[in-house]
Length: 310
Picture 1: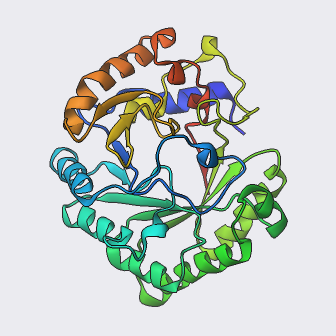
Picture 2: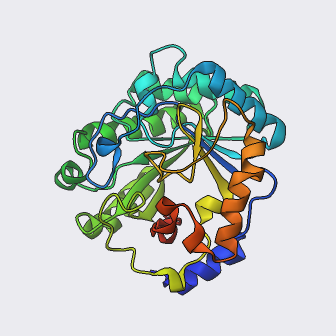
């Protein structure tokens, strides 16, 4: 396991600690802020902001600007919800993905817990042109899964993911690229190697990542560094997170929209990125962490903005 110094040096070399430029390189939008699980390491069940769905016109406005300004930006179709909840309600998540791809976006991705990834949804995801899907499983056994992914079904999820991979193999398609994710915690860390070996053998890409505290909302004992060792947050440097209501927040762990940088209903993404968020990034880069909005000033999740891939 890499040391914190090695992580810092690696992120610095890759440019992760520098600004993305005149437009974000990652855009996360809440197509839906509802979820069907009550995961132990997640703050969703205690979220206080109103849950909702992103209206089509707001979604189109965001996608059209990304397509114009930075079509190679990574666009996450949800940052705090389960998008497959809207697999049948019109417009569906598949309609949204298709629209983004039709505008020329090259890196449209989705995260999901895969409990709703039935055969038809798998085929619709493939047909939509989705570039990658990240499936949160966090366990290599039903017993551990039940402790972490509360309300989900381990056997169903494994079956659904294997079915998606099988359809891809049968039809010869190479998208979406399938990642299975494991958030390492005390309750599941004994299963990391089993998880990696099982899914590598099945042809999936494996992502192992540290736990986040959701800006201090849940306990994360892995976050051990203080401000004297702090470095600019990757999420702050590169990403823009937009709620279903159109509010731009600090990052994807600011689930209650504790600090709003702007509103995409009244301003362009480019304006928000180069005005209030530019000052926000500058404080990170200058090490003026005490001047950040409280939710970011007191956050320790900048240590977890990384992952190991297999």
